[in-house]
Amino acid sequence: MSIESPGPQVGADEWVARQGRRREYLPSWLGRAQRETERIGWWPRLAVAGLAGALLPSVGLGGFQLQVGIDALVIALLAVGLNIVVGWAGLLDLGYIAFFGFGAYGFALLSSAEIGSTGIHLPAYLSLPIVMIAAALLGLGVGLPSRRLIGDYLAIVTLFFGEAFVEFTNNVAPSKLGGPNGITGIDPIRAFGWQLVSNYGYYYLLVIALVVTMAVLRLVERSRTGRAWRAVREDPLAAASMTIPVNRVKLAAFAAGAVVAALAGTIYAAQQASVFPTDFDTPILILIYAGLILGGAGSIAGAALGALVVMITYDGLLRSSAEAGYLFYGLIVLTLLVKLRPWRRLAAVLAATVAFGFAAYVIAKAISATAVASGPQSGGWIASALRDWVIVPANPQTPGNWGFVALIVMLIALIQVGTRWRTILMVPTIYLASFVWETRLVVEPSITRQLLIGAILIVMMNARPQGLLGQRRVEALT
Image (cartoon, rainbow, N blue to C red):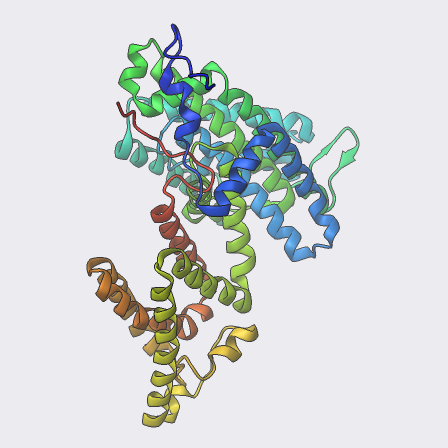
């Protein structure tokens, strides 16, 4: 005997009640793993993640790996703060990086000997709350003229604020702010006779700061303020009609995001023992947004996870030609595995690509020995596997540049043509991507890192627009 589910109840919103059944999960075993993880609960998952982060140095991280971890945790803390403004309140804040710089410069001025002649040299337990409160006030100041703006207009105003901060630190009061030379000799964090003297100490401090910040924001997310932020994000007019003070809610989002960014800035300044204007320019903002988009805007855990993935990839994997090669070719293979169906189509593309490469190499070698005079630039076993497959001329720079232009044309063509021609064009496109990688990209790490992060985001936004842990917004259907 089956028991029918009860019908609509007074005071219950069916759409909200059925939200869990409308949740979109990752495909195949990833979706099953996601469901099992969600059964554990948010707080136990946070505790497990924090414990794993705290135990990570015990596996024997070297100095470089530890610094990558510190940088990743700083960006993760910034992404969690940016999630308040962008993910919850729906405000496109392109000046967020300025609050990070404000926290760093504020700590440098209050807790170092840089302005000791004025008698200001506070311990960290006093300077941190002062800087964070001042950042909240600065956030309110930025939000006041921006509270009536939305979309592109808000982005332009906040972008001006971020660029103005860099210009201010570069050119205004160089005797205090150091100008382009920045401020050096910043005190480490010390309080009550306790002082951080090693990167391990700052690593653990950042783990604690990130976990505590995420816990506090989880409580805020479930509060009236968190619900008001999300309501303003979805529809400001509807939120105002429900008596939500839209302007005050926006100001609160700016202030809360500024506080988290300033906290990250203080720890960053103390760990680096110096601050420079270039530390708070647009490239850092791009990394923060990349982490938020990859993880999923609106998700606390997604913001932190996305930022960690982006920074470990950007600062760790892509600095080595061998590891960068594994990532590059791994992404190509993974994309083919996910996108090409049926399996015989995938097998045909892979076999044709291998045959095309060997044929191209033999023809190029027969025409001119200098056309294959240099070998692949990737390290490890990848170089051995590609040695007689990919063409690398003796002077690869100019051919690599032309190949890069041709690759862009081929990628545009792939989007425009039908399925049959797309399958055919995929073979030379894959080979051309390998040629460009081995001749130009792998030897230009600064450019390559940005291009690969952009490529990862493009693939992610096409495959899963809501990010790794974000939830897709599903419209009501009747």
